[in-house]
Length: 297
Image 1 (cartoon, rainbow, N blue to C red):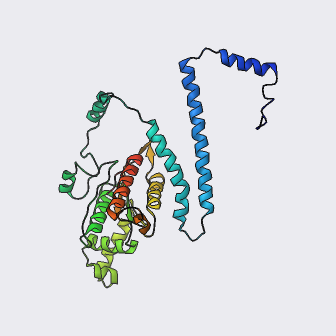
Image 2 (cartoon, helix red, strand yellow):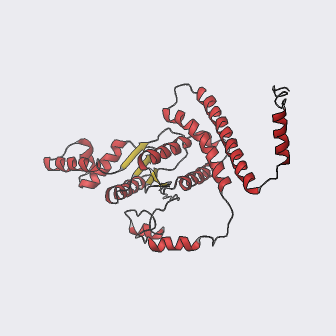
Image 3 (cartoon, rainbow, N blue to C red):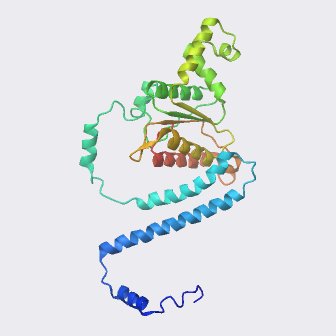
């Protein structure tokens, strides 16, 4: 009565319909089909609520935030919902179920490497053939030990020789710094000469050939200095959707280089120690790699 439905079943046709529903002999197949419709409608309603929350959060923006932070607001809300649905969609089954199909698929499609090989054969052997999909590989070292050089070297090998799209997510260095290092390695010209431009005509021609080559390979770069961790994940996701793509629901081959993994905001230390916060974020990054089916180094 409060919502105005007191007269909804006021005629005989509606009463007969209710009686028919009440006396209906239920069929399990029909119930499952109708229950699935109800479940989908419940998800649609939940999505509407998430979008309303996103709208409210967006209205709190002041305009001083970077655009990537504003764009990440609705993405994060929908990400929460999709993560929940992924968990609900899973089922417990016997591990041997479908094992024969799995084996025949492997035998019918032999591979040189299980993962995407880096330019370091010993490292590839140590990690099982290369950087594998749905995994996060962590190389740790003190400052100025060559971590970024490993990243650039790996990206040039994967994008330049294997022609697999690679994204360098950099928390510190600029694009120009990367180009100078790569150019020096590619041409064997000292980096000081590259950065100052004090080179011979022969060296200048080598550098021009380098710029022609670097433009042709699928090596992508994004500086994320000042980004929150959620913004960084949103940036990776947009690159996968826009530049990598999928076939039959499977992400095409690609590689994400995260240079380097650290806390992006001091607020992350409000509740936990630094090593704990890094551990949580690394777990989050690995779950993200599993969900979007890509390897991360």
